[in-house]
Length: 126
Image (tube, rainbow, N blue to C red; front, side, top):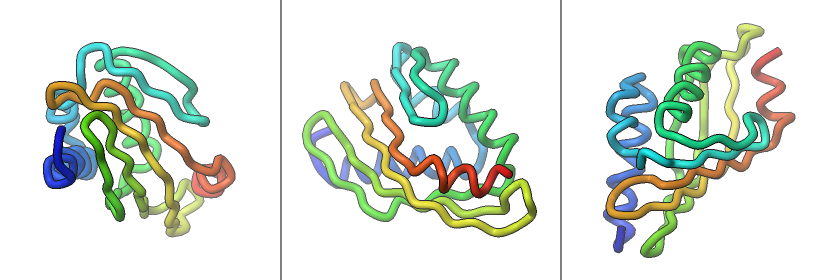
């Protein structure tokens, strides 16, 4: 990943696959040994484990849609400010913002770190 345009293309692919629930596309974008960390889910490793986590999110928040607001990158790291909208488990509409840091090698995501306010997420999963 050497350009902001290339980084934006990768992030657009990830967002499109996430929003359309096509995890097989995400599977192909992640390195087999991808690592994942978030304050909510903790840390784990492996492409299938990350996909399982995403499928759990889809089941918990079935109408969630993400949007990449800001994307910036260097040769190996992409930082994205996201906005997520949908209906919480209490039936109310929500909007939360969070940041993800992606490490990339040879066109594959090798690490994902999710930074969000746990209180924001708690407010949609009551």
